[in-house]
Figure 1 (cartoon, rainbow, N blue to C red):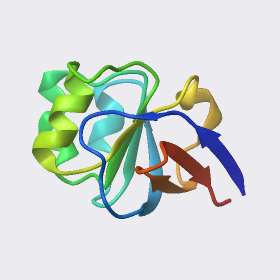
Figure 2: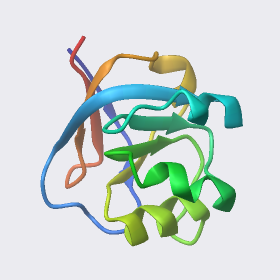
Figure 3: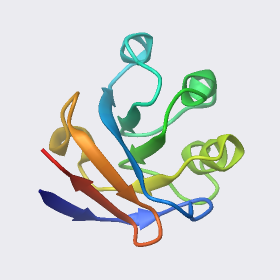
Figure 4: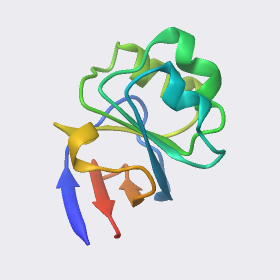
Length: 109
């Protein structure tokens, strides 16, 4: 179990969220996404919003409260946490626990 501390952006989701990681480097990675996965990406773009509807949460490297990841997470009702170098830390299929209130992502594998 490894804990990574970042910052929760958007609204602070009340409960912890657990799911498998889906590392997204491009649109083709979203096509492989399964409902209930946690999106791990450098950033989020507006055209990716439909994919977030089936995501449990977002972990991004770059975002602020006014960028797309934060706004879309708020609209969809899922947590969004920034973690530096996230796409290199986490791998597809890693079990992640998002602790939004503390801004933590815990890798349970």
